[in-house]
Length: 387
Image 1 (cartoon, rainbow, N blue to C red):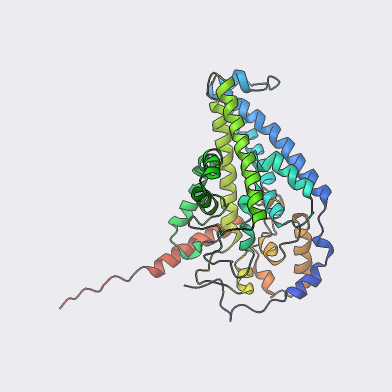
Image 2 (cartoon, rainbow, N blue to C red):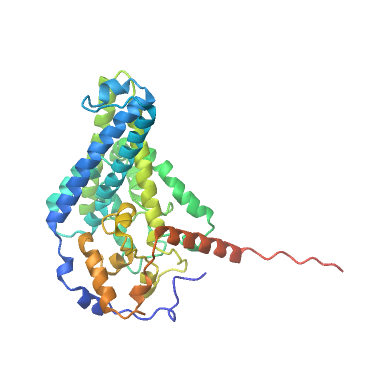
């Protein structure tokens, strides 16, 4: 099967030249941007989610409404208006929750003492409550290593452009089952893993990574990384145990609106991320290790429609090809770096071939390539012998 590009198709790309164009100042983190962006989205997201949960309680007519909703929230009497408010607040909370959740991508790329307090606060306000502690995404760093990218050791890559389209559909359905699996992993698997070493190894290898390849096996890690994992998963377990205990000991009925709203929010977030993931690469490689030029061509930038782009690919993720070129550039400088590269590189430069206009166009192209690949692999019908 074909890879993203052959060596003949891929002109050599000068990273040094691109680095000079970008300059060193764009690699510096602006703490004010990180804090203001995250906290504003967190507070507004919490506000919208609280209202959505309250509207859900009214809609579902559950006893939960009288125990769990905020009395300060005004409930409209009109059913139509109630549904409108519910849908609006749900979508607002999902978009903002998705944005703060995707700061995990920035956090795993940070090194040393960069924004250490911010990383801690992100875990307290988002990583632990959302059950996405940063250790589950540290395998993302292998996705940026040239010898791993697009190979069997890259848990974030599948050659979907060379597979049957049903695999794309299956990938888009996984958000429906992930929330309960994550709940089980942290509430039940965590304490069992503490006492059974073999099960601990199973959980580490198969249940501790935010990846797209279901057959990916997480490699063993240094002691310091394992300690970080143990601490983070302990607080996820403690968070879930607290929620379950509060419900069990203080409520006469299960908070179904809370469960339904939490599940709905999680599914929407995961679906947004799944669509973004499908558009992040061209998913054309199934022949092992790729050259750097091929990896760059296999990644996609979306420089157009920045407002809409920040909804489905927040925190700089719409510049995914640029991120693979310079993973250390913080998200708030990616747009500047992209414009500098476009302005100073020749029009036929390899980097300028990484762009796409819209996510829908990229998804349509992926689907068509998958269909074409499937058709090309189908055996020709046997000719009939008329003799």
